[in-house]
Length: 167
Image (cartoon, rainbow, N blue to C red; front, side, top):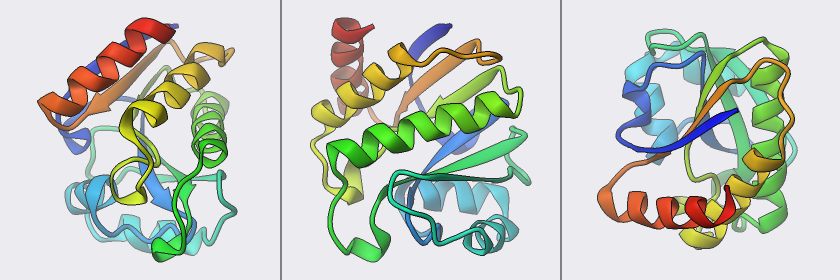
């Protein structure tokens, strides 16, 4: 499976599936979720919330609407509405479940953000290591290309450093 760290806006990526850094309610508020919601159109939030709430670490899949993808995989690495922070276990489970959800749908390409970091409060480098390890250890049937996306230069450099050590 090809792996790369890329810099950019996840809502502008082209892939079979994009991963949303979700809370357990699946409500698409700010950060990655907000960027995807704004680019996809309002229906994505309604569909996502209709599939929630989910357990911490679980994933739900919606249509991608106006995004350049077939699916959005909503990976719940953080509790609903700031009721606690992401944990190593929730990030690991959410990443594994997101990979599996895309793979089960026959996706060949997937873009994943730093789940559980940012508004969920988990340290970026530690979270990036968990995401990278989960990607490295995943045995796909259909996935061929997984991109770990960073929003800015600082995040990109940190994730790239970790990825170089892990993968």
